[in-house]
Structures are given as C-alpha cells and as structure tokens.
Length: 236
Image (cartoon, rainbow, N blue to C red; front, side, top):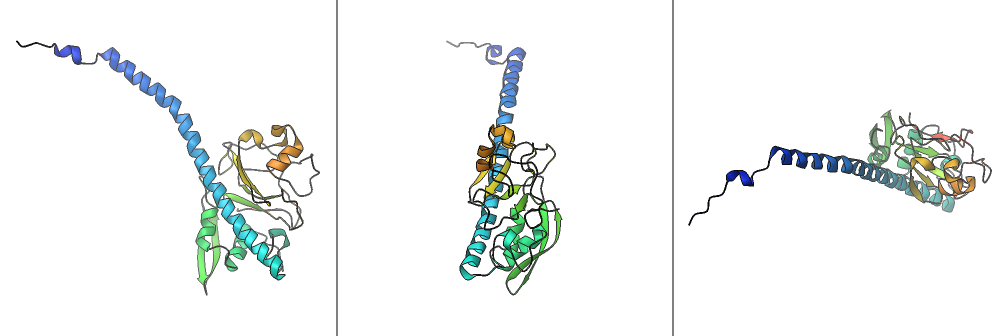
C-alpha cells in the first residue's frame, strides 16, 4: 500500500524562515563584539611580542657594554659618544652592532593602523635604515642604567604616560595599550588602567604600568618624559 505524503508538510513556512533568519542575525550580533575583542587582543599580543624582541636586543647590548666597558653599547640614555635623537638613530645603533636585522627592526615598528617603512642598506653585513616613512607603532624611552627596574623602556604609540587614551591615537586608540619595563615584563592594559586614577593608587600604577623618571613614588605626573637625555624616541 502506498502512503501519500503532502509535500507541503516538509517545507518551511515563510514565518518559520523569517524566525530562523532573525535568530541567526541575533547570534551574529552577539558574536561580533566578542570576535572583534579577540582580534584586538591578538593584535596587541603581537605588538607586545615585538616589544619583547626589541627589549632583548637592548638588554643584550647593554649587558655586553657593561661587561666590556663599552659605553657605546648601553641603555638608550647612556649611549656615547652621542645620545640618539630619533627613533631611527636608535634602531641603527642596534642594527649597526648586530643586535637586530634591518628587516626585523622595521617589522617591530609596525602594528594595525601604524605602518612604518624604511630602506635597508647592508654594507659588510651591517644593516642600516634610511628614508623612514609612516608611523612607528612603538615609543622608546631614554632609560639609563641608574633608573629603577620598574622604569618604562617602551610603550605602544597610542599611550601617553598617565593620560586617558585618545580614540584617534594609533595603533590601538582606546582598545588598550602596552608597556614594557626595564625589568623586562611587558603587559597589555585596558583603557581604564591608563591613569593613576584608574588604579586608585599612584604607587600601584607606577609598579604595574611603569615608573616615569623624575616622579615621586606614589605621585605620578602626566605626559611622557621630555628632559634632554631622558625623553622619548618616536617616529614621526
């Protein structure tokens, strides 16, 4: 005996189809912020790893200089015969001494919305950068050997010390910022941690985000250091 099946019983009605589409749209709307946040976190982690590589090159140079008495291999604020006055000058010291390759130095300075380029010239195996263009994603502080271990060595370009983040600042606006201190530890911080007020304690802020040369313990002051020989190197 044959059983007849009404073909319309197995089909979606228009109402059912619209309900399914609405559910999918709601789920997508809920998922997008989480995916965006995860992407931003991954990008900031990549920048933090670049900062760590820059720190390792700097630490090795300073350690070698300390062991040999070579003052031209030192922390940025101690370099002789002349302190670097630009970020590219500083990078060329690291590449010129073989602690970084030119291509790696350029890569470290790049992040989303902060595209940095330069020409790499190699003579006798030594890389030198020239013709820089764009915006470097990192800022290097002129740290000295005498500075406390918690002193900031490098930050992401969008962060100005103890200042609220600017939404238009590259590379991450108000999505967060990154610092690495002289003691080596690097961290990604959320927007609310940009100022001492965000920590409800100036000392905690200085110990976590980092210490600014010249500040009093427990009383951080706004803006990056600008004292000659203790300022910040950035491009442009």
